[in-house]
Length: 433
Image (tube, rainbow, N blue to C red; front, side):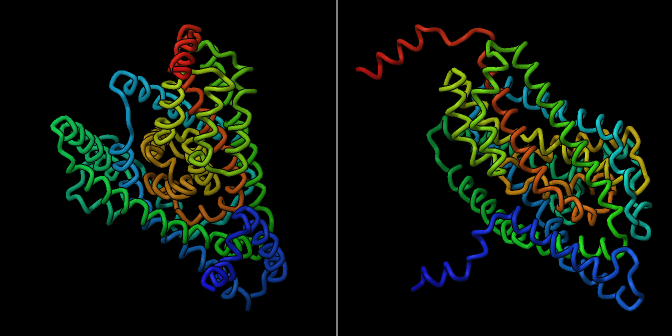
């Protein structure tokens, strides 16, 4: 009886989120055309503006969840990740390098193609004036909060990152000390942080379920007030992001060719199952076991290299998402006809790098951390709602790039010499015994 009621009340959950968004888009366009299609009647303006209320509420909740979510995600990742000393340092350098290159590629493509110039979106009053002109020395001073709770209240992403990294590194060191002295007190702390993280993620899942309603409201309002002109820029954004992701994939293949024994063609064909799973599920976490398997069975990497890149590295690696967030920030600035200067783009780079740490396990991580990236340079976060209309597709593409990044790190950790036959014979003899 209970199971029947549960199935009846949650039937809508069986519809994939991307299909729900597609349905919402079709309905929104229809309603927007009925309400004016760019030439609304004066009497419909109030109704049209109210259509965006669900979207505003969703974004407000996302902004509220973003800072505690990133804080808990980073600390939880540092506590639970099993990283050997020397290999861990090399893993950190590879992940940081790949993420930084991804963001720079994204900014380069966005600056050259300028997708935001293809179709202007009417800016809310005063929104363009909120874009910050940043002082590097003031920025350095502001990275240290006056109190621990201040970053949570003000949604200050850089301060949150400083606190999260500090607590994560210290708690990890304390955990090692307690393990060495045969103490297990850290397990209680690890359980508390893990539980809090899971609780916030559960709330986030509720919010994500409302995204189709938010998409319906913002698209219907935009079509009714401005017609289809603003969506030309979104089409240009899709092209720009795909170009940037392609360049990032080429960068991975070059790194694999130069820094490992793996043939790039073998790398692509062997990892096909992982890439397709990542694209279809839009989750690097779900793809993780498949990535781990293909790295060993189809590409032939050592188990240690495969586990570090696919299992450990995936907790920190979010190259495709970081690339997209940087491009989205520049895109919205272009839409508002307010280009970010070099210093502000540097802030976007720093924020995207650190916001991506530990975000791989968060559902729709790009959507959550994007609120922090936008806030760091004073961009209005309400435009994230318009990006959601194309995010369901781009999210799948960048997830595949995230997985490709994990596999690249594994190949580089494996080195320039293939796994020796002696090692394979030894492992086979141990299994026979």
